[in-house]
Amino acid sequence: MFVVEDLSVDQKLEILSDAAKYDVACTSSGVDRKGQAGMIGNAAKCGICHSFAADGRCISLLKILMTNECIHDCKYCINRRSNDTLRTSFTPEEVCELTIQFYRRNYIEGLFLSSGVRKSPDETMEQIYITLKLLRETYRFNGYIHVKGIPGASPELIEAVGFLADRMSLNLELPTADGLKQLAPGKSREKILLPMRQIQKGIHGQRMLLTDGRAERPVLPMQEEMSLPAVSGRLVPAAPRPKSAFVPAGQSTQMIVGATQENDFQLLTVAESLYRSYDLKRVFYSAYVALNEDSHLPEVGTKPPLLREHRLYQADWLLRFYGFEAKELLSEQRPNFNVYLDPKCDWAIRHLEHFPIEINTAPYDMLLRIPGIGVKSARRIVKARRSSRLDFEQLKRIGVVLKRAHYFITCNGKMMYRTKIDEDYITRRILDLDHKKNWELDYNVTFRQLSLFDDKNFA
Image (cartoon, rainbow, N blue to C red; front, side):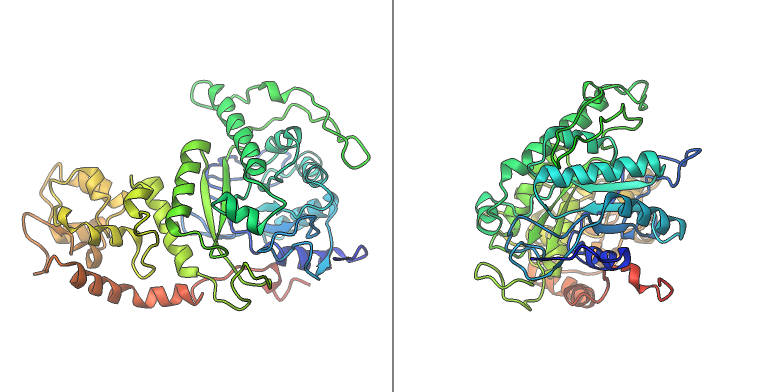
């Protein structure tokens, strides 16, 4: 491990922003903090991410590592201890200055800060805490901040950072304990799940103190003056009573797809359990990019399973908003998705005994299970049919994707076209519809991570 101390901030930025690109958990739904007098920036609940907001805006954040030094030797990680790569670290002041300067140039709207583990979990978490404290109190930054928690860090540090960040996340990385033991021997599920539970309890405790439906900035027991442990030869300054909520945008996690042999059913079942048991906002899925030589990993140069990652995101959406359960979508006998069909279509084709469904009488929860009908269009259908019986032209105006839905519905007892209710027939037709989009996803044609260095005027 080759550590360089005398790099410029720009050189550090190039190294540590590139090292952060494999972490995909960077959305910010759930925050509604407007601009405040004397503060810089704001965090709106429409979302801040390095992609697209819920309203379609392309927005960005500064996505960097505090350091790419790491004491762990996780086999899947580009920053693992045994890799011969250039190492460097930001100081808290450098992160603050970069964030403010990029915000003032209108390059970013928030900060996503992750890190390798430099000397110990506590030392690294301390540096993150000092950075956020400076950014909020000295630099008066009011924008969105997402921080990666460090497994194994002390509860006091996790707690202190939670009052300064908008969202926190701890990466589960792999869905099974065996996979984690095999590829990340320095980590354990207990070290990851323990701070997850702490964050969940902190968020729940604050919710219990909401008054009249709005946050009154309640004083929780954990908000008393505290002295954090000395971990770098000095005592961290005592944390004042925070003026903001505890992790107001909730917590999330990430699982790697394709580094080990776990199937889609295992991934989805773990995600479902995390949503139910830990109140997670999001579970992110990251297609493994084969960069490290190791007998336990896919060969270097193996194409990342991007289409499989996409199907897991679609299935995750079905769990969170459409009333599906993991055991309905997959099973031990059929543990993986057909990557060429979206999970909802796949489910519908395998359960043709439920179809076709009469659109004018179907209950809301069944409307949600029809391919081509989303949450908004299902609500519009329920509302519109109170005053009239719907036909296919009205469904099109409502927003139903008829080229997909017409295989599964009737309007006033009739199908849109003469259609065989046959699994092979419908599968072939839908595969024809999705062929081009699937190819683009599989070959990474439609998206890529933005870079601060794409701007020719950056220098």
